[in-house]
Image (cartoon, helix red, strand yellow):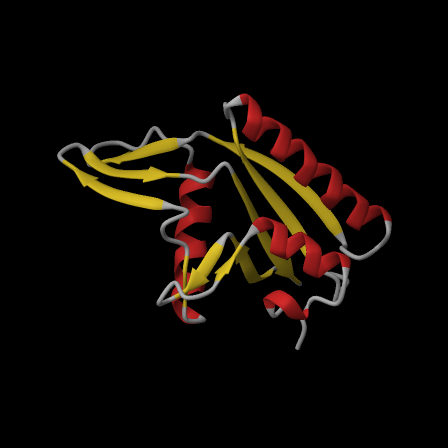
Amino acid sequence: MTEHTDRPELTVYLRASPPTVARERQREVIERAERLAETDRVEDVTVRRWDDRVVVSNGPDTVDGHAIEAFESFKRYAEEVGRSVEPFFQEHERADGRLIVFPVICIAIHVDDELRAVFPSADADRSDVYSVWDCLTALETDGEAVELTD
């Protein structure tokens, strides 16, 4: 039997080989996310790493399937709620397949296994941007800044 909770579960995605400055930002995000778990503001934190870019080839797939699945689910979710994951994630068509460029840091929020938010993201018209920092600050406070509360 699966226990249901209203507390979010965070998956923090980090680029595997970031520049030094970005690596420090990644450490800060992990520390803040872990504090959220320690103080019971979130149910759990999972950290995953992905390459900076992946080519989904027209031939047999040899890429990180989880990164591609995550990206596709983020894109679908954003479209459903009137947001966009571009330009933070980028897709380019190439002769040998589709190139996907991943952000240095991304947070996906799930509640009871349902995707509820992705950061960074923007409104469909890109008038409002929701950063990873916005996400963490909202979780540390009331959640309203990035629509994490009902």
